[in-house]
Length: 436
Ligand SMILES: [Zn+2]
Ligand SMILES: [Zn+2]
Image 1 (tube, rainbow, N blue to C red):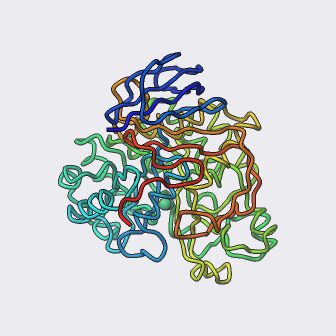
Image 2: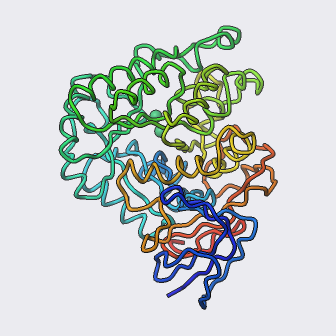
Image 3: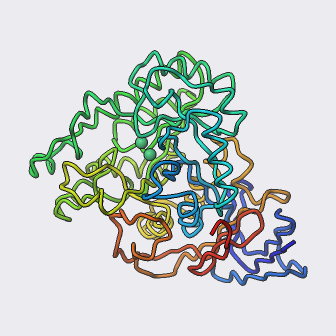
């Protein structure tokens, strides 16, 4: 079995309040020691001088598209994109074809991940059968098959009574509901954030209330009926206000924001002349909303930074703005964007970044990850905070290219990704041949 000695890195592990220069020794797939001057023989030695060593990053919100849309992404390509992006674990959403709403669906994903994947894949099961929004799935059975959470993401649960039963039922298992909040009657045929830019461009708008109304509704249901709620991709300042107040009252709600909502606004639709890679759900919002998201990150209202990696083929995205599908990819750009736009500009610290990209996702999902404590599974990410490079979509490991960040100059990159004590990605290359 491989053993790895990572020398002289700045170890940042918020799960144990650690931020200091030391060595990390890994053997038998497990973190053995973290201290200065580890004197051990290792089959692999990594010099991490000037680099940051952290618990492996976890993306709580990824679309791997398999089964059903293997032309957009597969577990093979998606997990390689994840490794290249520093993610050692991803949670894959249930809106595949067929929808992942059965034991067979969960088992299929787990077995494909074992055969072809290079990072940990934690499946999310659908809340309702076929994501039809009406009939809830067999939660207990799906959990025993390996589901870590439930979500109809892609679609909201429009029926409040269904959401009530979902919360009541899942409270017996203490698993989170990953909640895509969108009132479909309000979002209707909208394609971008309703506001000044949208009226200027003459496109159909999605009002912020389409999101905030359901965030408010579901917080209310959670307080009455119990359970655990994690709000996906918050984008509106109003949602942050609701979540901040709920958390102050001690409500068990958590939430995530995406790198794109944290760094881009609806201006970009105009600036790029209707580039369909700026079309996403929820839509990119206004600068005021974005500022409130940053405040939410800083004061802990936002627990998690998640990519909502949503691959689409060039063919599908190559349409007029009104007709193109919603969604963009994020696994291979998240670290660079967060470093460049939020850490180096001093909105958040590296420690906060790691908390929101590893420690908190693990805590919410209740998976034994997100820590480098001795004895923990050796999922480790090594980051180079100062490496300068330009994002090139044509170099992605993902099967899709739909990113609004192509060509962006960044500072901060992923150096090495270690999963279960094996070096999977290093210096731009995937080192695992599995799954071919
Ligand atoms: Zn969603
Ligand atoms: Zn999603």
